[in-house]
Each structure stands twice: as C-alpha cells, then as structure tokens.
Length: 327
Image (cartoon, rainbow, N blue to C red; front, side):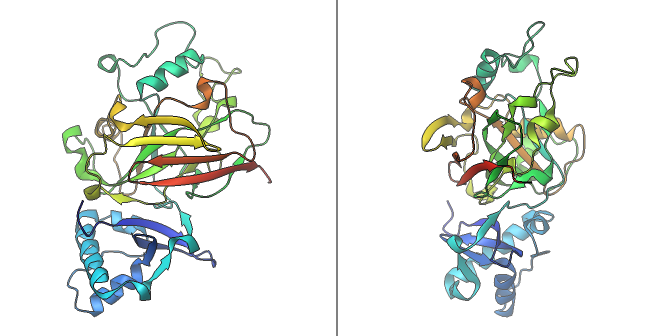
C-alpha cells in the first residue's frame, strides 16, 4: 500500500452539517479546508468539487491525483488546523445520496444453499443452485433514502419480526458508462465500502401475490436498512477486492465469516450486466452479495436491543443497534 494511503468519508459535527473529509488514521481532515490550504501554499492541482464525495466521484481520476497531493501536503505540514477526531464526529454514509443502488441476490454458494434449505426458492420448477454457466447476475434496486451511517440505530418496522442481516462489500462508481465490459469495469470504480443489506423476511415473499413472489420494496427498503461506511477506500488502496474477509457478529457472536473470493458473479460481471441495461452514473453504488450465515438460514432474527457489527477487511467496521420504531 502506498505510504500516502488515505480513506474518504462524510461526517457531521454536533451542528449536524455534513462535510466530506480525508481520513488519516483516527482523524478526519475537512476536505474543503485542506484543499484551500494546499492551494494557498502553491499546490498546482485543483479539485473539481470539494463539497461532497459525490462531487469528487464525477471526475474521479483527476480528483484522486489531487487528493494524493493534498495528503502529501498534510503529512508534511501537519493536519492539526483542519482535523477532528473520528470519535467526535457522526459518520454518515460516504456517498450520501447515490442515484442508484444495485444489490446482488444470492451471489455466494453458501447463501444460495441456505436459502434453498430455508424454503426461499420456489417449491416447484427450476431452481438456481449456484451454477454460473446457466444464469446471469440477479440484481435488484434498493432505495437510496434507506441509507444509514455506520453507527446509526436501525428501527425495526412495526409489526415485523423477521429482520435479517447480510454483510456485503459495496463499491462506488466514478466514471460513468454504458455497455461496460467486465475486463474494463474497474476503470469505472472509485472505491469500496462496508455495508449491510438489512432485510425484512416477513414480507420478502408475498403470500397474497404468489405469482409475483418477491417484494423487493417491502423486503429491503425500510428506513436505515442500508448502513454503509464509515469509509470509502479508494480502489488504488484495495489490492485485491476479490480476497477480503466478510465478518458479522450479533451481540458479539459470529454469524457470518466469509470471503469475497466466494463470489459467484464478480463485481466486474455485475457492472457489465447492469450497464447493458442502463447507464451507470457517478456515485451509483453496487452492493455485491452476502456470504452464508444469514438469519433466515437458521430462523434466527434481530430484535430490539441487538447490536450488529459488520466488517469487510481493510474497509472498516460498522456497529448498528436495533431499536423499536418510534414514529
């Protein structure tokens, strides 16, 4: 890893106003202030936007080069005038409002197997059993409004009892594109994040509409059902996104312990598939599928008071507590 490696994040001070930051160690450096200081000191590069992570993603390759120069400047001159401790800030989703959020369904063999055992596949007719050669990526959309910070509480919707976890690696699109080939897909990826596809199994399958079967809205897009972060780690600092551990605990007990090497369809293949349907835009997010060990597999679900910790190797750990819905 480069000596000047850094992460990015979006944070809020007690006043609640979000700001993008460069993360160095345990400190968050206000991006706008650092950029201004760097330019005042004679820095030749200029960010095309410093108001949000999304603004950076819109010209990612050029902005990444400038970010690297700013980090070198900070490491030489000191970060104290521009930094605050991560512990004093609220971590928001790094990309606050992506245009589209794609999620991969049943994309690890262990997860395919456990969902078949749990009766989440049709009782009759053909079943997807994980055979890649006879299928294509299966993606669904989740509402960007259900994003949550890495340490935010998650409310259990009223009347729902089967709230489940799905630890996943996410990526953010930098360069937009259409009809992107898998072998070129990483050129369009700005960086990677930790996330969790929290799911409501009570209404994932609609007994009242069996012919339609899956209710992706009701099963996936409740408020705060997409905690993400705390960091966006630039692609340059993730040597192999297809060999990272995925770990999840509930109240300290390990429930998921997998690796991104177990993808059925890789993130690159998911990008190719989605971009053949619609144009990918800067800031779009892909959540690339979960490994085995979800609650549905054993009939074990989250309840108020439970604490869920989600970690992807090198990308950061989230800690979310579940609480009753109050609204």
